[in-house]
Image (cartoon, rainbow, N blue to C red; front, side):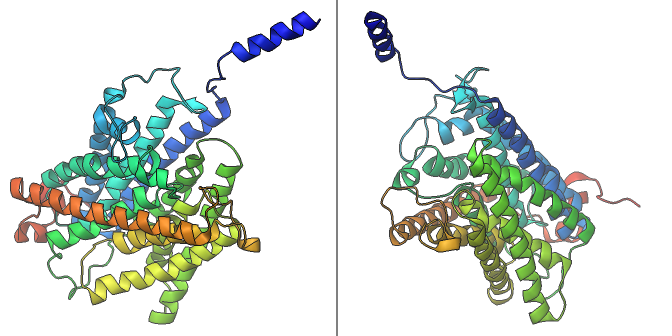
Length: 427
């Protein structure tokens, strides 16, 4: 018996460490989440944006979101995934996964197939680039838009994704961004407002009203965004577990609080609540909870949502009415400001010393609220700064080669006919 026990012990010592094993529940959840996040762009964001523009440009916005999905998907296959997630240096990944090389049916990333992980992350890249459309809606050439989208994904999204999630310097520093406060929302918001300033305001802004042409489309798209966001945040747990469940719960709470707060702000300031305000507040609540969703509890999420509704409402008025910048569909005040606010509030409500408002704790052992807040500030500023500079350079290149903006008479006629020789409506 002793010899048998000794032999078993020696075999156990000699055996290699257990490799990652496939979990079918986790895999099913991530595949579902990938579908939900793609659903956020097509048709969710597409309809949300399409309803917000004027009727002569509705088809152009739908077309932009649709073709961005195609272009980003192709580039992700060729080199985008490799730059974001393969082993490289502190700033960008290497080229070991070009054309998704090395990814087979049995290749795992944790407890899920790497193919599922790559697909899930692809949907994040798609919606990030598509969000920028709201900054230059109704005035950018289609060819310039496609070229900008391709360059921006490779030169901005992929490196920052690597910084935070792919083993880069912000992740190593301990920056806490569960589902994309920096990677998605700050990058998209910053790029949108830079694009709005480089291209200039739409003809007539801000002296002439440019109301949404179809709020029914916008509210339908907003509902799809709300539902899809469960995959966005819940799927970022990369497992079907309690973290995913809590992320979904706090996401819903923040969205509800953001919508309600924005509606009340409008009611107080303008005398009537609007459907546009409610859905915009919902998106603000969703964007703000995104970086915090895997780290905070329900009570903290309530405060984050309330803060999002108020701060993003004020930011929208300030940018549109005070600075007079035509960020057409309010991408920066909702996503840029919301993502930044969410990153900072993560340092507050992820802590474990706030009683009912406590979260799951900090990513770095021994971190305090103050030290984590400092790391979050660095992540926000680095993302804002790099995105702004890189976006400006890319737009200058596309402008010099293709011309970014349509002619004044083309803008009056509308991009549906000018760019695509079609109408969004032909009744």
